[in-house]
Length: 357
Ligand SMILES: [Cu+2]
Image 1 (cartoon, rainbow, N blue to C red):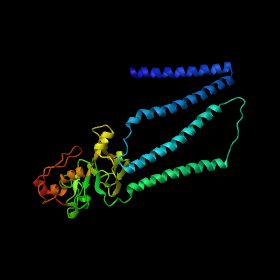
Image 2 (image 1 turned 45 degrees about the vertical axis):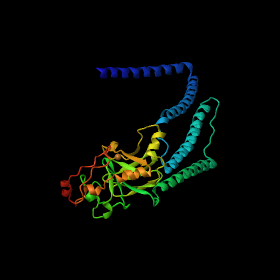
Image 3 (image 1 turned 90 degrees about the horizontal axis):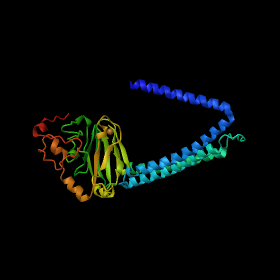
Image 4 (image 1 turned 90 degrees about the vertical axis):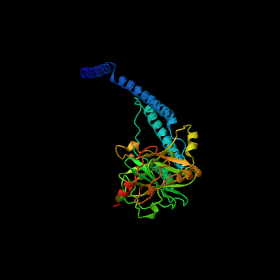
């Protein structure tokens, strides 16, 4: 029934439009084509002015509406640089946008069709061509150069005192590995990956692996004002480590190691005060569509003082102790997982059953 009514309505609307256009055609004949055209031109010219004003007002309103949903201040130095680059790009392109739109709409209004105006033939001007090619080219080159400098900042070799943390994406959570006391991440081999006892495929024949710590609830702890270097990888498909509060992101690609380093400058506790949000957390998002559980790939970064970090680190058990064959029985985990995939409980029997390929 409703389909029938909608069909009738559509036919009626088209009939009305057809009749109106017919009527205006007859009116044009009666009143004279030129007079009607002149009126239409004036109306269109004024409508364009209204459209320009409404458009600018709309941009202003949207900006005001979403102001409080923007990210808080950048939580690292590189992030501040990225913010200033973003602001500068927005300013430059914003000025150009406003100037060109203003000119476009003003010309439409000012030079609307008029009886006595003749067309000015202006086919070519070398000076203008050079000007509007070189000025944008120079402006763009400057913006790109600033971008490259910032990119080099985060991808260049990290300072020697940097805390090294490995971040590995998998469908669908983040595995975070710390190098332990020897400050060196042991070798990994994808053929040794075993979801129950070796989530990262650590090669137990490499002694550097025995003190490594894996946080499977996606918690990345780091020390405020101390460089942290992320060694990024993936276990399956392409993911992307997204750190919006630090204005950073880096692809996690299977088979390729990517890196990123930065110096967090605001602790999680301070950020809670700055944002006036007691539940604030720095988030690790996955910025690459990676499958049906992509939306749930959420990790957290906890920026803390050196003392807090040391205390947390001391409470962690090495992955080897809990999961490698012949290792001592695992102690109860000191920190309960808060989300993502829980660390599998390993009993002594299953430890013996681990087969190394
Ligand atoms: Cu994803």
